[in-house]
Length: 429
Ligand code: SF4
Image (cartoon, rainbow, N blue to C red; front, side, top):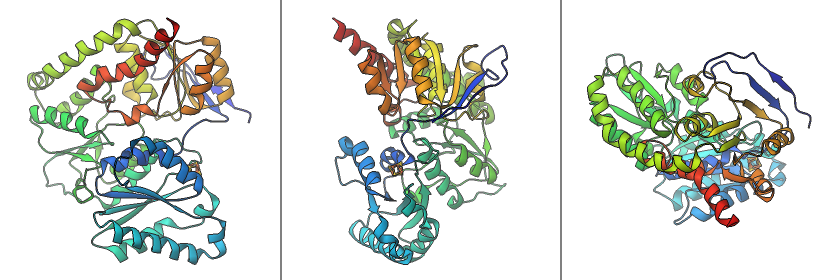
């Protein structure tokens, strides 16, 4: 496929208006079904039923395979051409599968029907199916739907679509209710607990998380709700929350010491926390985190990194690698550049960073090979060929499976990037 490229106008400081290479060619990305792997662990009484093909079933099983230690809370209802003999048959079959599932797994309180991209599935109206099944199974089970389709998406958009499907049903608060803080984006429980302790130390007690750990405990929202995005790929969820009166607090993302401090500071400022109280709350964990990161910096400083567009975490990660590990950014690719949500991140990137949006994979591989970076961050599909060419790689998907946000995880995050370099150095000995 031929890629189209264009370059927008440059500006001096930070990367707020830096030139961005836009490419629209062949892409190498996973689809949104992948998000089920971390979302099913987060919402403990939810089940994800993919309505898809055998390919979808294979993807979800192989992505999750190594992590299954109990009966999984996801499955695939396989729809194939045969089922299209009559769409009503496909709907009946779906109803039968769901009824059987709920009888067998009575602990399920929230069921997501997850659409996929095979043409057979696209013809099914899953939102009507979800409404129909919700009526049948109410009040014990709520049924929602979203699409994890791989057409024109990247894998983290699955989480955005899932959280967006929750927003219309969130309980409403009124203008008379006390102000509250909403953290949006799936965080590992350990990270969530740490964040909650920090907010409590600042005197913020009215804090909730989307998604909640239980289907029945999803947060209430209203005109006095302020949200902090914990992930940079939640454009649709944020839009729907804003439509319901929630105010977004602009901030960098809580990756690394600097990002975490600025993210927490945004909440502290919005809720009128005094600066001494804020500094006292973060003093011990930020000091501990900074010291741990410094130990990794010694081996990473001066090393160059090239990021292929994949997770949508690329720009906050690049900021962390450049500013806290002193790495050199060769090219930072992102599938989509949400300028509003990433504005604070772009301001912090070193001026002159080469940014690219979208992908034309062959051209990008050529640029990468020409640069010979010390480390490449990319999807699984590109990692093996690049490793074979002698280039160290880091799978970007690991960054979604690993707790990386907050002070106590900053050194773990740094080590994720250090590990491929250490492994390569050992191989050379
Ligand atoms: S949703 Fe589409 S891209 Fe994803 S596994 Fe199924 S067929 Fe493949």
